[in-house]
Length: 70
Image (cartoon, rainbow, N blue to C red; front, side, top):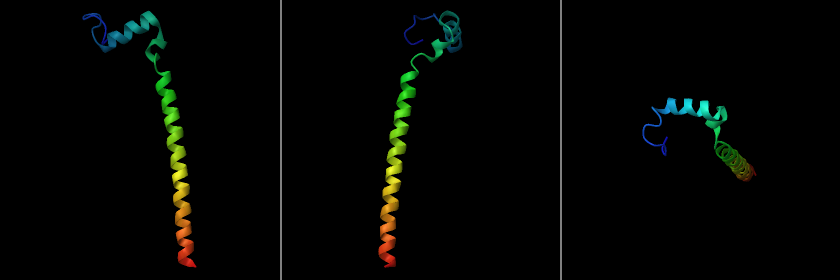
């Protein structure tokens, strides 16, 4: 819609209807593969770093407790 000539579409629903009619249902999902892959990579890094941070914090806390008890 951003690059279409003025008057090409009556609105967002008209644009979706024309895309479905002319290009099929997969036209609505075009360009979605990279954002989904990027989110997968982002979540892997986020949970990996979170897990390592929790392990480090638990380890440090455990050492402090051991020093207090002894």
